Image (cartoon, rainbow, N blue to C red; front, side, top):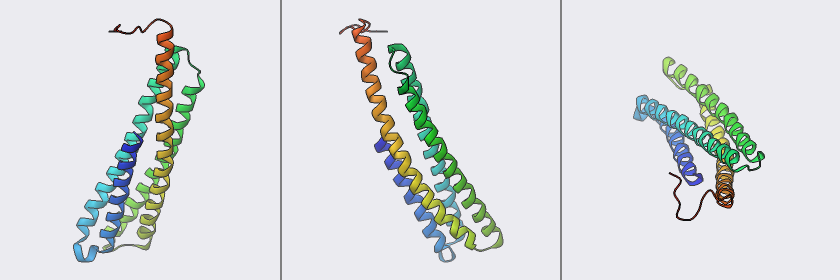
Length: 171
């Protein structure tokens, strides 16, 4: 998952940068292209955030189940919850930046020109996304390693209990 997240984050940063570049040249290319690209970029940004949150939610459930069934250390599950809380804070920062850039862009569109506030918001949204993606990559990476270790410990604990014998199916 870390590589998938990195690809999605990089694609999102490219889209946001392209949207800003099109906005700079909007008078020559038309404002509609900028607006369309900006909306698509911001929707993709929300998708990346929701996918990351969903990944941590699902892996948290899997880890919780493994901890419960194999009698593993409960702090493992608490660590996953901590990762999820970290991503939730990142979600708030990204969605706040998305709302700000959308509001200033809509205000500029209604008045017929870009505003200084929208230019500042565009820079802010790029900086926020870069910082958030950096932090979220770290969280996703650590979570993926924790999930792998937990599932290995679960498999070992279950096989030591005689629950899983080679060649036996648990279906």
